[in-house]
Image: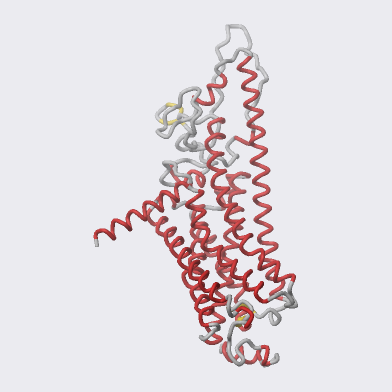
Length: 445
């Protein structure tokens, strides 16, 4: 198929004066002075984003603890950010410096297509990340069934395939837009498909992410309230002649070396391997002829059992514990393996419910907060451009306002590596490890 001739045929359906390539593709006169600032901002985004995302990829290669099922989604998001920062942003910055497009309509259409595919991949990855976090806390067994090692390649390829399938049909109408001084699809020629597509991507897609994090927040708060009630009940029971009740939870928590902690130790413990509450202690022996009496008392909150999702593989692997691979600890549904059954005729030690709640929930919260921050950054960077695109469909607002809103969206792809370093200890340690190796190689040469 001859795309250049197809583009020419479509262009003849409109007034030639409306064609951005007639007589030449130049930026709008109203942004002539601003384009120097835009070029400088583009160069900054290119440098920061490229270095940060390359550092993230190298960290995955250098640190085995980062190579988990959940982190495969982070890696896919990093790849789309790197595509934008290292290849697409320099093209846009060059356009600003030249005050127009000089590479012809074919290259412009390719650039426009890749820009929207990269953005679509980011949105779809954010949806998968939020959905996996919710599945992890709502139904960990379903999480294990869906996000398996053999299914992760599918979830990596899916965002790219969807992006190409949705934005590929717009190939003939990707043109140079003087108001934003970059290549994009024609605002009028693509309707109504482009209107429906943008609504689906930015309203439905981002709305789904918001719903997932809202549901996560509700479950976390419900579990926290249940745990608080459980602790109060334990305290009341201890005050009525059971002084060792409060110590049972702490003493049942294994430390980083796998040994039992001492009673009263409130220091953060390593998350347990299974997230399964310890079996109830055996009842005290009763005198002969007397029936054992059951005493109703505070029960452990059900949300902190094996389905809580707090002591999960993804949280352990992204928060700097000593776990080196996903199979080191059995996940939900694998209790009969290490830590869940009998080995050598002895019952394997398992953490208590308080240990699972205290250690695992902290890890889950940290990873989820980082993912939610990534979502917020995307919203903040793209919301001005989306709102302006909807409100100013007739192009009555100043051209410079459109330019600033478009440039603000550039920041998204360069901020994610900063979030990884600030909000995740294991990523931060991996970055340091890579930088030290690079520094050592530079000194040798």
